[in-house]
Amino acid sequence: MFKDYPLIKESKKTVTQFYPHIPKNHIRALKKVFSTRWIGQGPLVDKLEIIFSKKFTNNLPSVAVGSGTDALHLAYILSGIKKGDEVICPLFTCTATNIPLLYIGAKIKFADVDPKTMNIDIESVKKLVTKKTKAIVFVNYGGLPCNLDELNKIAKKRKIKLIQDAAQSLGATYKKQPITKFSDFTIFSFQAIKQITSGDGGMLVLKDKKNLKKARRIRWFGIDRLAKQGGTWENDIKEIGYKYQMTDMGASLLLESIKEFKNIWKHRRKIFNVYKNNLKNNKRIYIVDEDGNFEHSNWLFTIILKEKDYLQKKLRKFGVETNQVHFRNDRYSIFKKFVKNKTFKNMNNIENHYLVLPIHTKMKIVDAVRISKLINKVIN
Image (cartoon, rainbow, N blue to C red; front, side):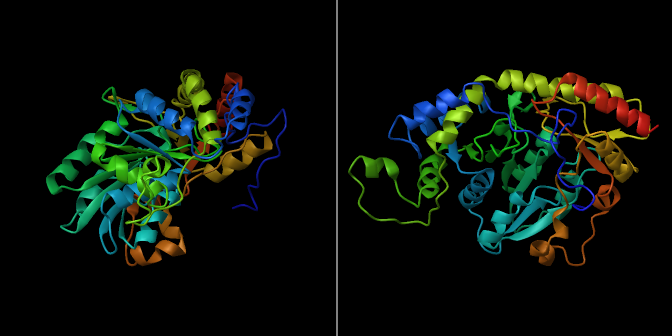
């Protein structure tokens, strides 16, 4: 694959798959950080958590960490997942969703993909639930929310924890509510190519505020930082913690990006709609999208077609970079023991046919128009 599709050489004529969004005032923001004594975790991390909660979670508590993967690991610990516990997870996702469960030694039970949305398949989830199921983990693929009502019905009936990997769905809503309302834990990612970025970073959102103190402790070695800084720390660590904190440098970039988020979202939405409107009448292409009582975050625009490889090569010749981005996790050796003698019909049917088109703030709307026209010319 990489031999056929190496990273495209950037030029004025090319459109890359991704491009980081750097806020307009990033230099000024970073200079301000460097003029203080706080470049690691400091007051800007605290400020970010408050502003993020107001903007995206309807004031549910947020804990800023070093990556979305860090946030997932903390969510799994706070959910009480232990070695040998069964956890239902999406087969189709970034490996970061499932790797932290290997740290714990949990038993992963992979659910098939929904071929229409690329999200976790609800019927597959239902078949996997047992008395031993501790949690259900799900991803909103490309920014398209899962069927949160159905997942909540399943979880409520069995008293199972719901953990939402919203790394791709910052700004998405469900029934006009923040998606964080519909799961026990929600994580977001600020990795380089997400809607907003701190270079790398993440956020853990907690539905139950009782988890906040522990989340903050295990983010920082198991130490109560407030007590330590206040001079009242008894110099004991009673639980295993990690070095998962965010820095004020990263927080400064995110605070500036949040100011621009409305325009970032609008621009990405325009590109998404250009693709959608120009490709919807092409009978050889299926667009991964769905109408419903929710709002897409527009992180990815994905199409499914039989001629995926042919189209990808043709677009390369015109300077347009495309790829599959994420892959089925049962292809990786680290997960092989969880998929022995198991088949995933839906994933098998689409795994060689989905393709992600570019969306980012460095693109112009005319770029999306040009790409759409090229696709319709090649696939007709």
